[in-house]
Length: 109
Image 1 (cartoon, rainbow, N blue to C red):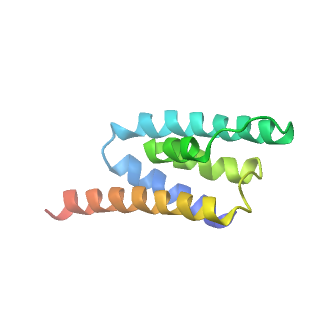
Image 2: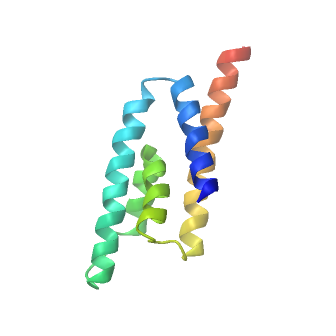
């Protein structure tokens, strides 16, 4: 849990120092992704048709990965599925790497 908080704080710092136009996108997509995790958890409990993982990863890739990170912890959903977590962490790394590269490029170029 502490690691998740640290990653979210790092991301928030990079987003606020980065292209400020991205902040509303990250916030909106994170809220949508968090709601999607809640919906999928509810469907899983009811044994109903679920939200496809490709859709959930699409929301994460579109900027909703902070919401996914919170959804995994808050709803305890997809927290044991290693293949899902690996893809999610790769998406997080891609976003953080891109934001970090942009930040340093703006500072030193």
